Image (cartoon, rainbow, N blue to C red; front, side, top):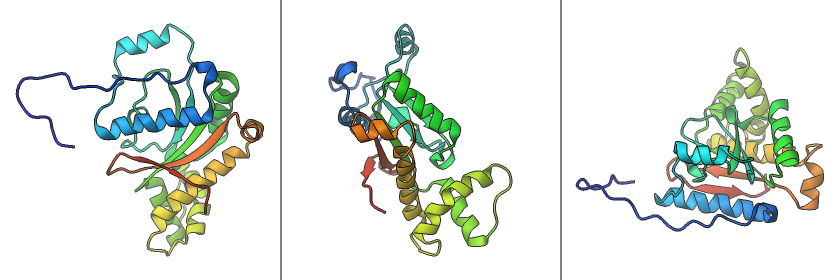
Length: 222
């Protein structure tokens, strides 16, 4: 994105913001539409939500009413509130290396769905993921990393194996397979399967492009 011209400072034009449907009327489809609309604002360079202390204080004065929970990677280039142009109180965010699921992550998602009424769970992967790269290297060399990094690699390995570790495109293929595997695992979660089957909650997979900033939904394919 080009830098703004030098000279007198001016306030950039900002589009009007639709606050979205009332909290009680939120559906998985509406929640997903809000996220993707925010991503389009982000990509266009016209975000509307300033992350300032005034906004934080305003939200802190009442109960939180998020409409989505996002599970993403810890990569510093993928700040989830920013890339979806979301302000305080709008989304819950969980980040682990390679968006790996564990009991704490599952319990957190179960909590926000059951207790906060969140209707959308998004699993967001991204290109050039370091956790996936470490897993590809581990599979190819047969060396498991020490410590709990080995746990992350262990959890991502099935996606690398399915993608084919010797395939020249193994990294992007494994990223997509790992997202889809995570989505399937969450849809089958004991506490989420019922609401998902009833249509009150949805779990979707998506991919963030580090170069363009765009988020693309993934289908349920392999």
